[in-house]
Length: 72
Image (tube, rainbow, N blue to C red):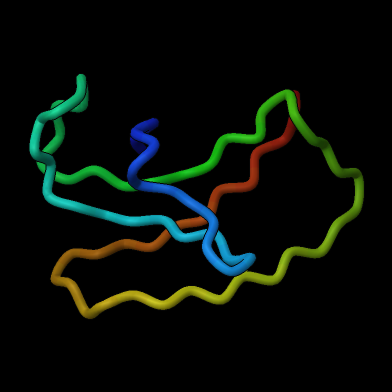
């Protein structure tokens, strides 16, 4: 997950995360970069329900992942 701001944005109330071939315009050294969101220290839930709908092109080696990590 890259912290580049051009890889994550909100459009029409939907979070859009992009994955791109790395153009090395930042400190990222990997071949591919992806957008993401870190909410660490911003919001915490004891009980919650998340609904996620994802749409992606068929890409060889693509591995979609959603990580929900505890505060501790």
